[in-house]
Length: 234
Image (cartoon, rainbow, N blue to C red; front, top):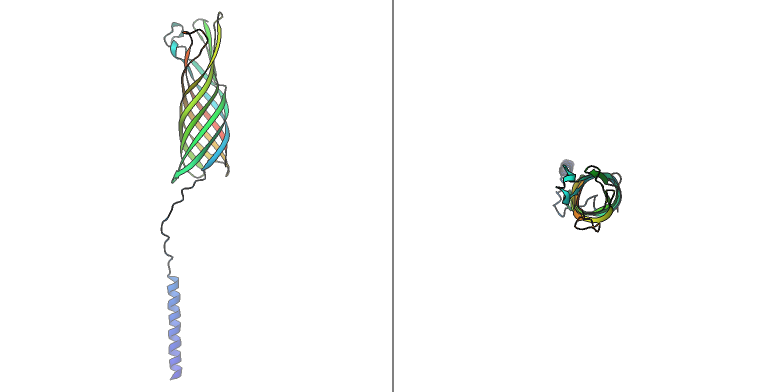
C-alpha cells in the first residue's frame, strides 16, 4: 500500500514540474511603456570647413537701362568666375529626422566680366572681390546624408572700371541683399562631411562713387553659384 502511495505522489510531483516548465516556456516579457523619445542626430554640433566653386551672373547697370549706347541689353555685363572660401556653423536636432542650423561663409571671388558699349565708346568691367553670407538651414536627417534648404543675408564687395580713352575711372562698393538655395551633405566619415550646394544671390543695388555725380553708375549684382565643400564636425 505504501509503495503505491509513494508512486502516486512521485507521479503528481513530476506532473507539477512539467506544468511549471511549460508555463515558463509560455512567459512573454511585458512591453516597455513609451517614455522620452531621443531626437539626437549624427548631424548635431558645430563645424568648420572650406569650399570652392563657380559663379555666374549679371552686373545690371540699373541707371543706364535706356541709354542709347547700351541697346539692347541696357549696359548689363555678364560676369562669371571661380570662388573659394571658408565656412562655419552649427546644426541642432529639432524633431524626428529634422535638423535646423545656422551657417556663415566668406569667400574670395574671381567672378568678373567686361563689355564694350556703343561703337568703341567705353569698356566697362565689373569684378566681385569678395562675398559672404549668414543663413538659416533646414534639413532632413537621412542618416549618412542630409538634404537641406538654406536662405539668409548676402553681402558682396565689387569694383567697377570704366575706360573710354578720355576718362578712366575706378570705384568700389559693398552690396547687401539676400541669398537662397539648396544642397545635400554626405558623411564621408564620422567627422568629415562633403557638402554640395547651389545658391542664387541677389546682392542688391549700390552706387559707385567715381567723384563725378550725378553720373556715378548704379549697379545691381545677381549671381548663381555651385560649390563643393569639406566640413569637419566637432
